[in-house]
Image 1 (tube, helix red, strand yellow):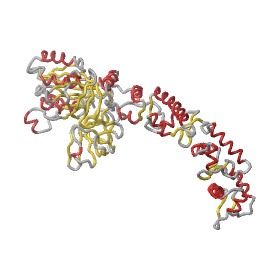
Image 2: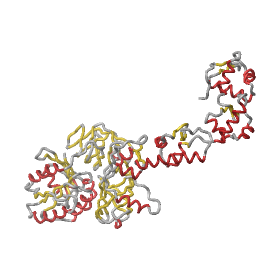
Image 3: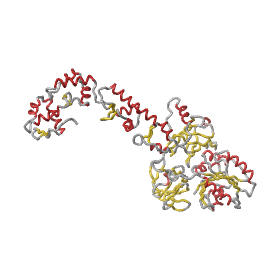
Image 4: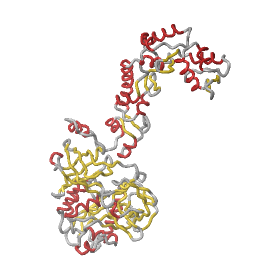
Length: 591
């Protein structure tokens, strides 16, 4: 199937032409048929000579219903422009063409209707000239009469040729179905319709309802009036949603593949049309079937920032249209450059941002996004519409290679600086380093640490980070010399201070394995545990605290925490009567 939207001035025969081509009535409402003009969107389809199917989105031509027209044109890849031979080019012809141009529609046909009432050549010449100046360029022209049927076979053949020129749809892309109608069918519940521009829908699929943060399930699918198990782009589809109230969604909402779209109320765009500086402060943004008021902030000559009244599921590269409804004026087309732009809080930020945007063309660019964002999650880029084919640096984090190298150098510098400022600590805490580098995730710090640095016990330091500063090493050596022949005697706290071992120095020595801490201000040499087990193993088993103290030639101040530590290590076991036995004479070195 290929889908085409009609466009043209009111009462130029768009609906009559669709009716003659398809045999179907595109005007759905009695009011439309009574007044002889399309008010809302109509839909009809027919089989072409090639056997393919064309579905028409018949849009209203009256200026009061331009928003309805844009809702139908937005998701459609091609247009059938209709101009009446007896009236020629008219105001709504121009506004519809401006809308098609703004949306970047590049495929179309010109049908000059009422060829039985007037010579079609003057209308053809004017319309061709107008269309040639837009994104449609040169288009094929067919003169027709919906009343007599003249030219209809030629128009069908031209539609076939147009269909053959359209790019192949991307059926593996995520679904973003802009809703253009929502209604209730008795016995089935809520049904929505739209043009499926990309992706594939199946009965049973779960979809995300944009803006509601909820999942809905596809109960049934219809296309071309028939129930189908699945539908592929490009297609007109009706989707029956299970258990979804009718008032939960309507025109301008969207059904999405879960987790694949970024909903945003702030975008930076490039404008084609009116100069950015001439735009009013508020306009209406038309994208897909949605029409949303926006506040406009010019940045550069052709770049603006738009603040949307409600979030929409937009992607980098999306085409949309800005319209001034008060003046019935199409201000221009926009191409989305960034769906997650940075804030502009600092003085001069807007001018700097304009320079960045000047180099963007709206085509998703992974390398460029990484260069601008430096660090970003892969899922975030995917939801922005940027294909990801690079390997993460940590978890699902992607990094600009140059920025990642700079961070690696900065890690080395920050750890060295911390070591100079805190010589008694065994390294820089990982969270402190993360904050210093302004990184959003601890995993990024861990990924940046490379030899000779290492992470141990939540700190980043050199592999020899346990080496003691010279004054501390000398103080420990004095303890070893003084207590070599009485290894189970602990220096008193004031003596430790006299030696230069305050609480911070003792902590550093304990972490380096140069001292063994039994309790506050109670330290022994590190091999005291092994020696104590050997001494205690020589006692009659079980033994008491008093016997252990005498055998070790120490005080109760040392014996009590020493035996408790041996109990915890499993070298000794305390019995119900408070006596102990040696469980093993194997090494009880600290673990």
